[in-house]
Image (tube, rainbow, N blue to C red; front, side, top):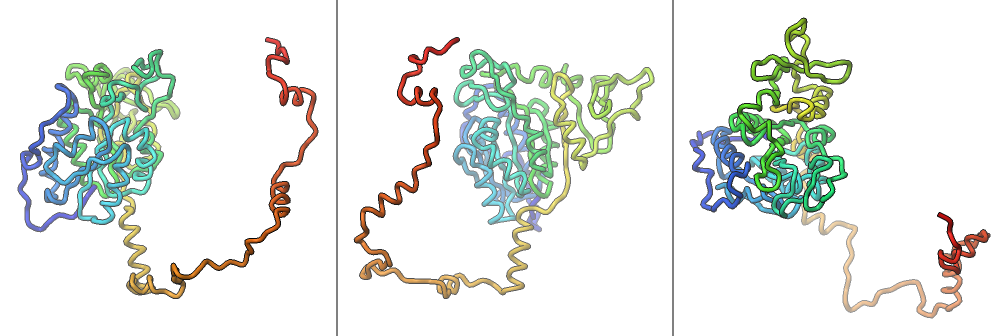
Length: 391
């Protein structure tokens, strides 16, 4: 989300964004890395600290505003996008950040999240995805894998998990990206790109819950293993990955597949990343680790009219056609009336209505009785056991 900056240079450091509040996450929580990374990125986006706001809902991640030395709102469950939308429209100079989790953002807040994305509101939305409810102590979340055993799914979750990237694509988000808490340099680059985008930015961050889901991202957060399990996307470059850059992604018909370079396969056979292609973005959003390397980086980035631009355009057009509105004149318009306590309510209906009219009206509401079968007659007067149902 881009925003206007002051003409006077603003020299800020990470310390300027560190609040005086004690951070109350579990030791080793991935949220610490995300917090520190955002605090390092904000001095570089060129926005005065007074123009930066963090808004959250409910959950572990939603304690974020307390730990940022900026304006902030710790709001109600799932509703952060609605507050952020109003704030961003009321003051377009602000850099508004929404911090949410897979539970807060995709269950009770799913509807609000979808509409904030589809409207292209000037927001940065960061979704911490640890695939578990952490604050309420380990229930399965909307992104938990099928079969996940938790306190609320002791025999394994039977639900199909939500794919956050695919959801953002379905809402036609103009900036969609993914990173991971353990790779702070990549996370910083992704957050900076989001902050400088005009319109809505949606960033899914794989985050490790060390208490209730500590092995969810094993293979992605390990420095020794991640290069073989993550594909880092760069616009205009072929999709190569692996510790030795010896693997890639190509299309087999309409289906992506992992190939090894060599033996007749070269980089020219691979998919080339295009941030503007919705078709490619859907393909990337469907690539689930461990079947595929996890796509990381900017998946989609396009420029479209923002919600505030469209709204202000309508206001200016209305003012040009009809002049600046006058609220006082609207209150005193022709179509008004006065209600007085001293005057009784006048109607054309008499209080002395015949009771027969009420009976006639009620009879008109009764449905016509249709002929019933013998079995229906039995069901209306007998218990089901009397009918002696056969197995």
